[in-house]
Length: 81
Image 1: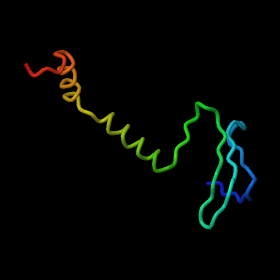
Image 2: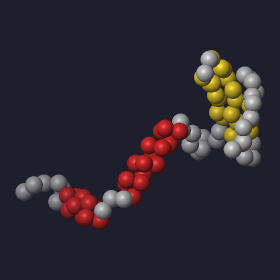
Image 3: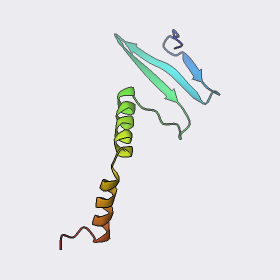
């Protein structure tokens, strides 16, 4: 892990320069960051990213029987005739 010290108004650049992280403000124990990145680069807080990974893993783990059940519902339009 690279650890850097920056002051308000200073930045770091990541990769080829297309991502810049700037320190906007420091209040007590909180740091406000500004992130400039290409629009197709997803940026998430860590807790959100962890939840996305968890949900994706659950989706991959669905059973073939679940898919058969869904397919059957779609075939008859979901009717309970």
